[in-house]
Amino acid sequence: MKSSERILRLSIFVGNGDLWHHKPLAGEIVQRAHDAGLAGATVIRGIEGYGATSRIHTAHVFRLSDDLPLLITIADTEERIRAFLPQLDDLGMSGLVTLDEVEGIRYTVPERPHTHWWQHAE
View 1: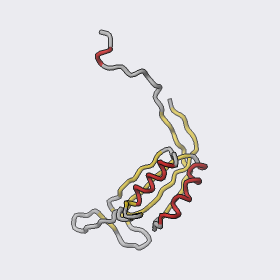
View 2: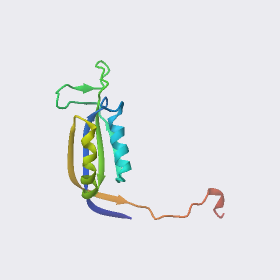
View 3: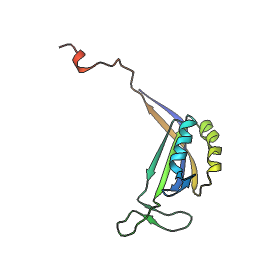
């Protein structure tokens, strides 16, 4: 079964080396999203990119970088995403945040009683 609805996607662009209280910033954002009960969050590591400094960060073998780009995406209803935004304010981060209205399609499987292979009739 599937259902469709309009949702908001929050995208947060930061660097892999960005920290908050000596911990990875991306991990802190995901934890806050989880604590806020948002539907889901994913961190994606880029292999190359640049931001406001125009300095290219890359995973190229001949150019070592410990600050690869990260993209944190969080999707939920507009109301819940907008209520979460103030939680980013005290992180002291330097990065871009975008909001997009998207169509969310949720797939669900009807719940079935769990049976083991040895419980099947022959």
